[in-house]
Image (cartoon, rainbow, N blue to C red; front, top):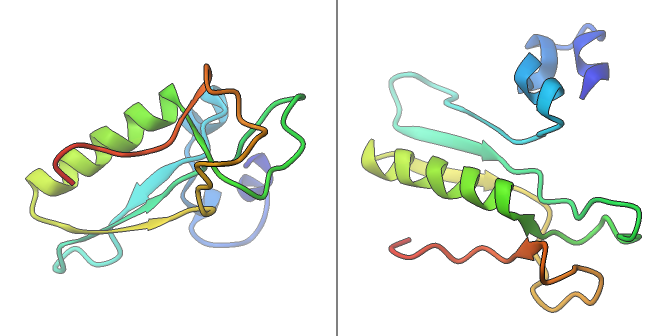
Length: 109
């Protein structure tokens, strides 16, 4: 993420904020057009950590699940179409520790 702040791409940070850097949290949202009710959710669902060799499959720890649930609820309450960009989640992967990762299923969505 830090590299996006020192490049010439726009917007500066590529959507990431200082809070993303401070918290090592690579998910964010944006609305591409203010007059169209669309919300894009950029979800970092990479399975991270020294015991997680396969970053190509997605999973969510509790912090990211809670964040995603709140963003979906906010978009729903505001009547927005939501697009989620993420790595495909594989609920049957064998490398995710079930004690640390949930696979998203929000009630009501």
